[in-house]
Length: 301
Image 1 (cartoon, rainbow, N blue to C red):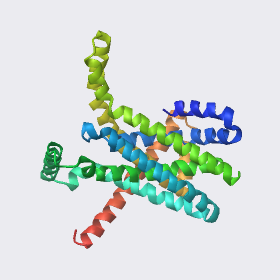
Image 2 (image 1 turned 135 degrees about the vertical axis):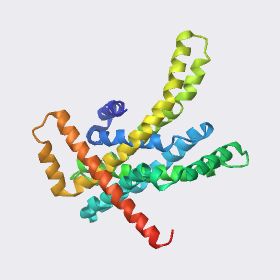
Image 3 (image 1 turned 135 degrees about the horizontal axis):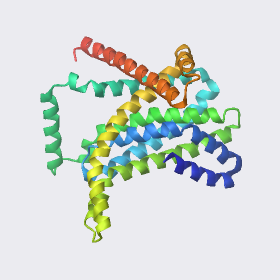
């Protein structure tokens, strides 16, 4: 996914000269976040009614574009007027991602089996009831995905902005807009393909050719396993991204981890850095969740 976006940006570079070249550099630096963004958003839109999958993806994609329409001018304004505020704001978003991830891990301890069963029955009844508007029923899922996208989009935009710092405002704006559009189309186009993979498998399995039928059955068997894998990767990405934001915002901790990984083999260094980010994300998520629960208890909820 990331490589295909970079190929596209290389083609644009021959036409848009300096602007496209800077956009390509920014996209390369944000490619790592793109992978996390993909895993998180595919996870967010999984589990909805099959007839509503693409409308949900489209709703989240529109929300993502709105997020970026807000974030691009906001990032440029903050960078010009209060650059010191960028890191604290990102850290707040990182802490929220860690909270979401830890809440998912703690779900089985925070909610009884009876609550989960009641929620499942409610969903089954809603899907079966023709009077229920599933578009309305799915709004919480869509809003949650858009909130997650907002934080990831903010990180992508800040990274991209850092690559063009010192250039003219016009160039900065052009690069941020190009990166925002490319990332949105790339991520949500790929997410749409993932959530409809089972439909493609069913269609192929009904074709006449033996090869097509075999590949269709493979897609049908792989689709649910892939979605389960994405739920795991999505939660892990929350800790990696959120924890990474927090670690980079705490200079002594970031330097200590970098010093520990320095001089190690590439694989060992990656394990140390990502492991430390994930651990920081888990700890931060636990602390935020404990704080939220304490506040709710004080308020009698």
